[in-house]
Length: 234
Ligand code: HEM
Image (cartoon, rainbow, N blue to C red; front, top):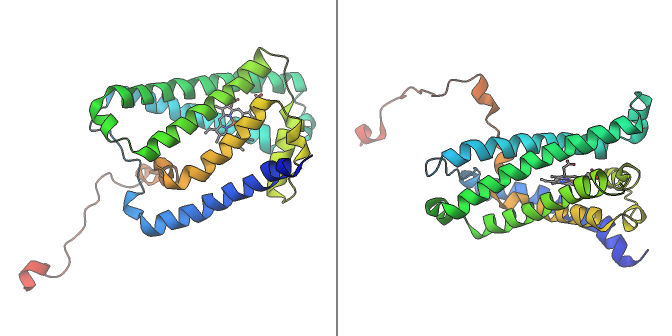
């Protein structure tokens, strides 16, 4: 293992995580009013109504798959009586379907941005960079799940990539586990760290402001005018 391997798999994740945390604090302090999706719903709604739920529900399923595949050790699923064959079928077919929905949604959202002139004009350079990295990340994810594990010879990432990934949070990432991983798995993980590092500087910050409060608060909030209005005082 070279110093480069150690930097790639032992240092890059911490740089990305630090930028992620510090970047969010900075963004919150300097740009609270820009902390939004920068929605273009008023400019175009038909493609958005289909593309957005496809992308976001696909993404939620992909996140669930990552939690199961990366954070839950294989020994736990074995202890629960889930055989390797059952796990593999669930991960491959579930992952492929979730990834497909996410990709289809992303394709619709990007086509909408390219075709609709008004939406295109609201697309910043940061958006373009973020969408490019996201497309590469999702395509690499599908190369792993569909190309390697569904149609190819298969690769047991739970014994390598997942163990390395958990090691990052125990402050003991074992870089040697990633050195032997297939190229698609290495590239997917590296591009993921770039994506995570970009996060706080993009519209992705809206993910932390999911309007769950809408479920129990009225859609319109009325407020009493208290005291004398400033104009009348003058
Ligand atoms: C360092 C962080 C990440 C690691 C280590 C990682 C690793 C993996 C692994 C091991 C797979 C399954 C491959 C297989 O079935 O053979 C996968 C699939 C995938 N990943 Fe990631 N991933 C990371 C972050 C992300 C992020 C941030 C996204 C997108 C926002 C993403 C999108 C996908 C997609 C779309 C798939 C294919 C569908 C699926 O199996 O869920 N990944 N990733």
